[in-house]
Amino acid sequence: MPGTATPRNTRTRAKAKAAAVPAKTVETAAPAAPEPDDVDRFDILEALAITGGEPQPITLLGVEADVRRTFTGEEAAVFHGHLAANRLREAIDVITDGSGQAIWDAVAHLPADIVAKLINKVIALSGLSEGELRPLSPPSSARMAGAVRSQAYADGMASISEQRSANSTGETAAG
Image (cartoon, rainbow, N blue to C red; front, side, top):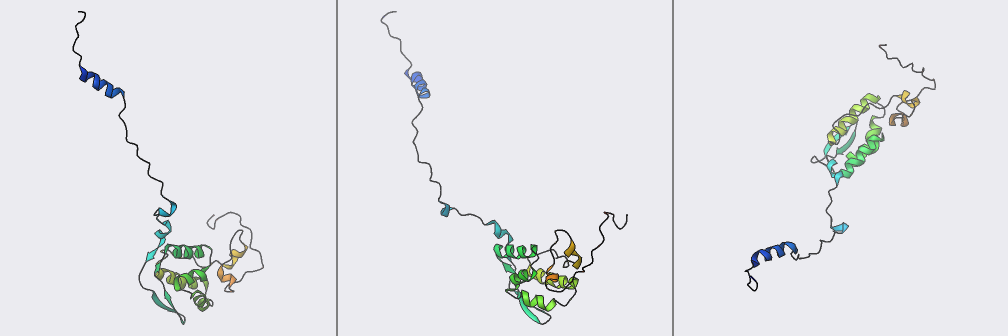
């Protein structure tokens, strides 16, 4: 019927309109990236740190020293770096606050396997190494390709022969 108005459902239209028009969002500023100095970073090197208590007083062939048992991660890394490079005196210096040379001089007259045993004991007291060092390299290692001469050789505790060793045939002693 013309001229008659049908009641409209304004609620349905309002809902449809609201769904079609996105609601206004409140824009917030993104948090500023932290300045490099503001970042609290965990120093992974501290995983090597040891808190082992008071130094242990020792004596070795008349040399008195204190073996430290507490180390920062950096000190532990320096110690392990010296060991890896076969710088035993320097490694002992780290754990005894400078007695490495005196300890080394005290044991210089002993056979390499005994030196290794004594140095292993000093290192074990520090808590920095759970394993043992191998005995110092034998004199024949000086002729091995790529081998590093031991500190014992460098200090005159060992010698090398000028005579060449026989070439290896690749066989084992059992074979």
